[in-house]
Length: 256
Image 1 (tube, rainbow, N blue to C red):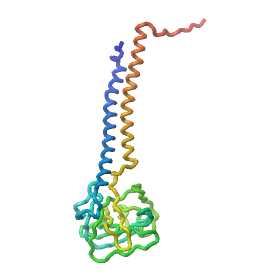
Image 2 (image 1 turned 180 degrees about the vertical axis):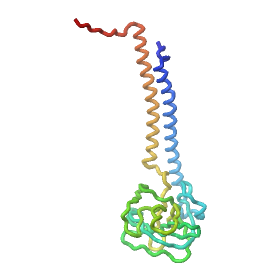
Image 3 (image 1 turned 60 degrees about the vertical axis):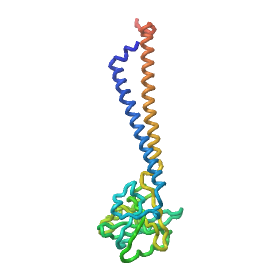
Image 4 (image 1 turned 120 degrees about the horizontal axis):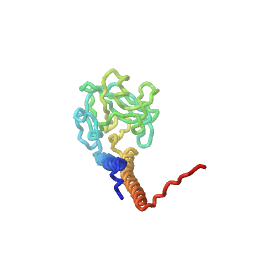
C-alpha cells in the first residue's frame, strides 16, 4: 500500500522534509539564542555599578567601545576646545540640551565630553581653561534612530543632532574619537547626564522580534510535519481504494 513512497515524486517530498525540519529547528534555536543573549546583556547592564562608584580607567584602555566597555568610567586629560549644544535631550522628564565640549588630548584625537545638561533657553557656560582632567561614563557614538536621536540637518550653527565623529568631521579641523563620555559630576550650573545603556542590550522591540521569529520557525517545522502526514494519509487512502476497486471510473460522454 505504501509502494508510492518509492516514486520519484515522494523521493522529492521526503528529501525536502528531511532538509526543511532541521533547518527550521536550527533557525528557531538561533533566534532563541539571540533573545537569550539580549536578556543576559540586559541583566548585566542593570547590574553594572554606577559610574560614580567605578574606578576610572585610562581612555585608551577602553577603546574601541563595545558592550563590555560601554558605561565604564574613563579618564582623560587635555584642554577644552570647540563647544556645541545637542538640543532636544531629556533628563528627568525635562527637555533641554547637552553641553558638548571637545577635549584636545595628547593622543591626537579630540574626545567629545558632555559636561552636563541645561534646560531650554539657558546659555551654556564656557568650559574651564588650561589643562583639565575629566572622568565619565564612556559611550559609543550615536546613530540615527537610537534612543530618539535625530540626525536631521538644518540646525543652527553651534548645534549637533547627534554625538558622533561623523557629525563633527566637517565642523572641526581635527580628528575626533568615535566615542564620547558624560561627566560623572557635571560642571557648575548644569545637571549630570546619566549614562545610557549599551546599544543592543535592552529588552526592546528588536529583542522580542527575535523571540517571535523563534516561534515562527518552530511553527514552520510543525507545519512541514503536518503536511507530510496529511499527504501520506491521502495517498495511502487513494492507494487502498484503488486496491479494493473503489476508485470511481471516469465517465465518458458520447456524441451521436
